[in-house]
Every structure is written in structure tokens, then in C-alpha cells.
Image (cartoon, rainbow, N blue to C red; front, side):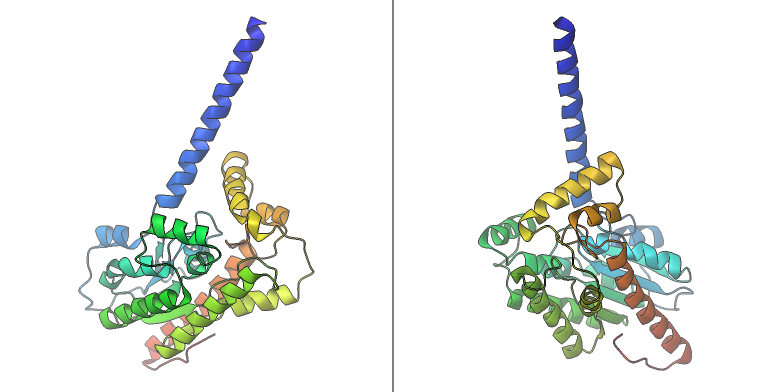
Length: 303
């Protein structure tokens, strides 16, 4: 009997230790910046004067967790391996909205980047899917107002105008991915609305436009139907994905397949197929810009 009690206590302590370890890991993933974030780059390379030009082009990828790459397949790292002739800075921060990105745009400006890729808005759209979500985002992200499509449009416009005023970078805005893969669901339709705002802002501000959503939708239209988890399970699926990744070494693609998605992991973040679509668009944009810079001409926007 004593041995059974000791074993039970030991197992309980082990389970508690595992849960605490997992909670700390998830907490770090949520708050830590990428190792190659703008502040770290400035600290290690100094603040460039802007002249003379760099020997290597500098590309900043700005956004939320989809860009950060800790809970999503990292499309920025894909680009690093594809384009070794360029340097990349990852300015993605988990859970942030466009307004939050605007608050931290100055370190990006200080880098004097050659290209800036902006992929932001999934949390803006997600925050409008119920008052509980809206209040949660307002509390955690310290937003000055209730999230709305107009708030997103204004914040995205401010980001672009600050980049245009403070840098000579070629700027590209990407449309946000779908939320979920059910084209009849209101979350899909809401993310479509926000993707259109990104497109309209790009053209209104004279930026390049990267049609990420359009490419993902086209892919899904040609893919066989799957029975994926529902929106109500996305949060649980995200937490489960962290657990399976951290504790059991599952790949993002294995988790994605279990949840029934083609391009997403948990209804929000990108698996390898989704991240590859984004990386393809950005790679083409950078190639076009570098070619234009070498020739001294201008390249057409878009992809």
C-alpha cells in the first residue's frame, strides 16, 4: 500500500512538472521576440547612416505570430535559405494587431531596410468574432479602442505611411490567410473582408501587393474536401499543438493533418504548404526589386 501511495505521488509530481514546463514554454513562445528581431539587429550591427549602400540587401518581415514562426511554419527562415545573398530581420510578434505593429515601427525604420514585407491583420479579424475575443485582445494588447475593420484600415495605413516617410524601402503588403478552411463560415468571410482591406491599402498607398489569401484559396479550391475542426476548437487546437510539438516532437504538418487542414495548423497558423505559398510570393517580390535596383529601373508591383 505504501509503495502504491509513493508511486502515485511521484506520478502526480511528474505530471505537475510536465504541465509547468509546458506552461512556461508556451508563455515564452507568446512573449519572446525572434532572435533576429529589429532591436537585436540594431544592437549587433549599429544604426546605419543609410550611406553608402549596403553590400547585401536587408529585408524586414513584419507581422504577428504567422511571421514570428514559433507557432507556425517559419516562412522567413525559408527565405533565408532560398536567398543567402540577402539579410532578413523578423519583426513578427505573437498575438499582435496592426495597431501594435505601428507602435513598434520605429526600430524597423532605424534599420534603413531595402524591402519591408507587411503581413498583419489575422488578429484584427479574429478579434471581431465575438465580444469576448474583442475584450480579450483589448486587455492583452492594450488597444485604444474596440477592434473593427476601420481601426485595422487606419492602423495599416499608418504603418505604411511611417515606413514611406522614414525609409526608401520597397514595401509589400500581403493579404491575410483565411481563418479556417470552410468557405461558408463567418470567420472565413470576416478574414476575406480584412484581406480586401490589405489589398485596398496597398494600392491606395502605392505599395506592392502580395495575394497570399488568393493563392491559398485557389489551392483549397483544387484540393479534396476534408472535415476539419471547427472555429470553436481553434483555441484548444492551438494549445494542443504546442503540447504535441513541445512534449512529443510532432511536426506542424502532422498536427495540421490530424486537425483536418490543407494549409493551416490550427485554423490560424500556416503549415509547410501555407508557408511555402507566402515564401514564394515574397521571393518573387525581392527578386524583382533586386533586379530593378541593379538596372536602376522600376519593377511592376504585385505578384
